[in-house]
Length: 253
Image (tube, rainbow, N blue to C red):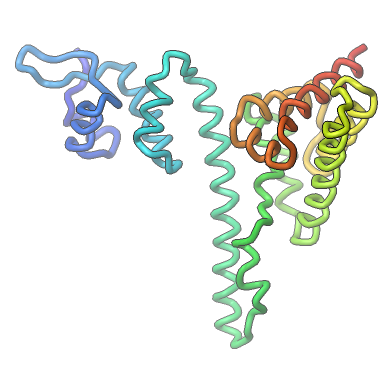
C-alpha cells in the first residue's frame, strides 16, 4: 500500500511541507496515490528520499541533488560510497575545528595570547583530510582502513606537514613527467607511481598494487579528485590513474 506523506515525514524527520515541495519540483514524487488522492510512498521512494537527505546534509543544492538522483545512470551503491567519503572528510574537518576551539578556550582560560598563525592556521590551505585515503571505503571497514585511522590519530602538526611536503613532491614529479610528454606507461612514470604507493604504505596503511590501482580509478571517478589534480596540471588525474594501473600491471607480471 505504501506510506502516507505524514508517515514518511515522521519517519524521516522532515516536514510534510518539505515532502510536498519535493513532489512539486520533481525531486521526489511518490509512486502511487490512494483512492482518496493521498500520496503513497513505496520502499524505492524511501531509498530515494534517504539519498536526497544525505546529499542535502552534505550541502548540495536541491537542483544538483535532483540532477544526480534522477539521472538514469545513477548508481545507489556508488552514491553511498561517495557520500561516506564526503562525510568522512567533513568529520575530519569538524574535528580540526573543534580542536581549534578547544585551543582558543585553553588560551583564554590561561590568560595567554595565541599567535596569529595559531589563531588562523586551521582555516588555511593545510587540510589533513585530503591525505586520508577515503577510496578505501569502497572495500568496507577493512584492516587497511582501520590501520590508516589508527596511524592518523597519532600524527601531530609536524607529521602532517611532513607527509604533505612528501605528497606534494610526488605530485610535482608526475606533473613534470606529464608536461614533458612522458607516457604514463613509461618506467619513469611507473616509478613515481610506485613511490606514491610506498608513501601511502609508510604513512597510512599497507597499500597493495591493487589497492593503489583502485585509488587511481577514484581520481577519475570522483570529480573532486579530478579537479584538484588537474589544477596542478591539466590531465594529471587521468595520467596518475594510468601510471598507477601500469605500475600495478608491472607488479603483477
